[in-house]
Image (cartoon, rainbow, N blue to C red; front, side):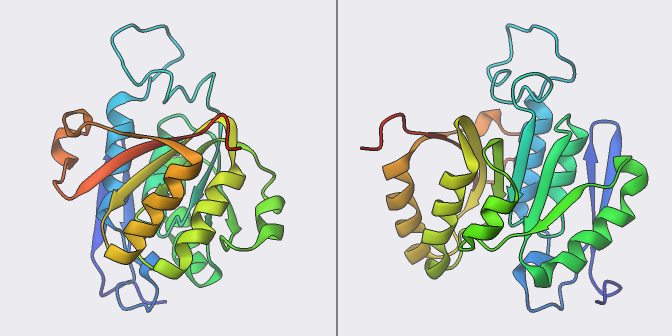
Amino acid sequence: MKFTDSPVIQLQVRDSQLSIQQDNGSFHVGTSVWPCSLVLAKFVERWAPSSPTTTTDNPYYDLLDFHTRRRRAIELGTGCGAAGMAFHLLGLQDIILTDISPVMPALKHNLKRNKPVLGKNMKTSILYWNNKDQIRGVNPPFDVVIAADVVYIEESVGHLVGAMEALVSDDGVILLGYQLRSPEADKLFWEMCEKVFVIEKVPHQDLHPDYAYEETDVYVFRKKKNNN
């Protein structure tokens, strides 16, 4: 895998800096860093409590309380690892980073590259969204499911929504960084999600001011209480 010809992304996360190498010559979209992962990571950086102290002026305190309430997480379509590594630095200590097998070398390369900053070996797992054995193998449910820029092929939408529903706990949350990539995939994705999730769009003014791109949004999904 050749990283030398691809740009390096530097991502500041509070007092740490991640250095993420891409392989833009790859045939797999997961070996590039996409804007949604950065927008999602910086939104969480803005609002995630830095310590388990009580606060009254943070509207996202309960959502992003990684110290006491939301402690176990999984990321779908991790790619190069920008979002997942950032979430770890922001207090989400128990997180599994997943993607398809061809993307794993890029992810593991970046985890090794950033180990001095991360301070540990982060957990990874090969996970295809339509593989029920692999989904069972990561031992759901999770308090938090993370996904960024994962809706771009209509054929994979049903598998993605099914995986999200299978992985998130009944009182858990899905944090989604989203940008329209395919009108067909977009239409199907929202139609399917509206059947099983309560969907909340984060207001643009609540995103990180330096990472509030007009075409990119952050959503919070929660399971509907009654799907019958």
